[in-house]
Amino acid sequence: MPAGRFAPSPTGPLHLGSLLTAAASYMAAKQAGLQWLLRIDDLDTARNVDGAAQQIIDALEAHGLHPDAPVIYQSKLIIRYAEALTRLQHSGECFHCTCSRKKLPKGRPYPGTCRHRTTPVNDAAVRLRLRGEPITFEDVVQGPQSFDPAELGDQIILRRDGVYAYHLACAVDDGMNDIVQVVRGVDLLPSTAPQLAIMRALGLSEPVYAHVPVVTNRAGQKLSKQTHAHPVNVGAAAQNLQRVLSLLGLPTPANRTQTWQPSDWLQWGVSCFDLRRTQQRLPPGSGDDFELPSPT
Image (cartoon, rainbow, N blue to C red; front, side, top):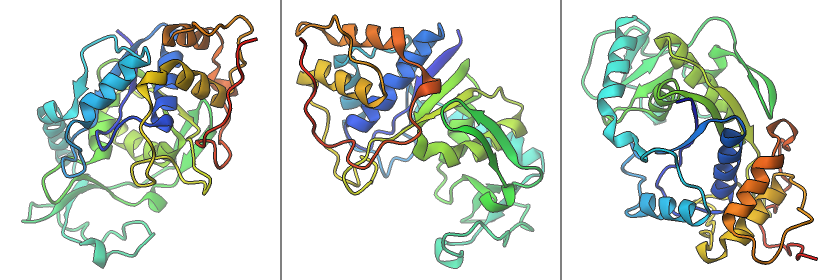
């Protein structure tokens, strides 16, 4: 069945910013009559935090965000990524790269140093050549997008340590499993172009993309493990949903009461959420505490 999805990495507990994205993806999926799926992007085991995946699942459920199918774990889909890699290699558009980060120009696209390495070598990553016409797509929130492959550079699809790269795994998963809608944070907007390039090289279906604003601290930094974002308080789920719906621009319902549960807030959100009217950015400090209006 056609679906939307929320795909967190288990690098820490759910925080306000990830709750906003989860709620936005849930409401958009339900509005469109889609299933809402939860996928745990856990391939990068070095960054995974023990117990974080279950913490995220429990926090989502405490907020009424229940997936419509069993939770998907990328770590259980290795065969799928291996098959995709083989197809890309057979296309002749891949090469083996032995460049270390220290050898590459910082902040610039990959210069094509190893493009001649078309046969396997030890201790090498696999890159996909990106070239040709600009990669374009229409984002529901951010508008028309265009990326020059030359500015993106050739993308790693298999890391030197043997881990399938984020772009490959995400492209394969979002191009399969009936995913027709991807709602995620605007910080991932640049990731869409290489993922679309991979989808198109594999002949996969392309979902509709909507990149919603991210919640930031006073310094304008996205809430994350690196910026010491606090976990959401699952004991205040209704208030948390009221807060993220407010950040998404939804009006305060006149008929709400102190007894509203998370399901009430989600039902309200589904009834009036409009991705097309969502702000493209939130002001710095949007993740800081503020006083929510009380029911009248």
